[in-house]
Image (cartoon, rainbow, N blue to C red; front, top):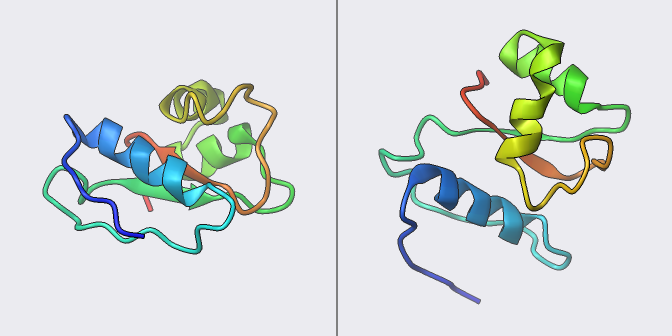
Length: 95
């Protein structure tokens, strides 16, 4: 299946990519790396990950975990409910 379109902004585009990519049965999502998303940073959750640990690794401060949580709403319903294989958008993160 091919879906195409243009999002209103980079954050919305990234959330669409994540929502589709985190759907059962979807093996991969291909998207053009436009100037609006070329700086996008994503993290694939592994066993033992927490949002705090991901925040420390990608944002340099474990206390910034709520930024990751907010950037991944409504896909995430609670900061403690992440699972291995899930892809998260890291706002202002570093690869």
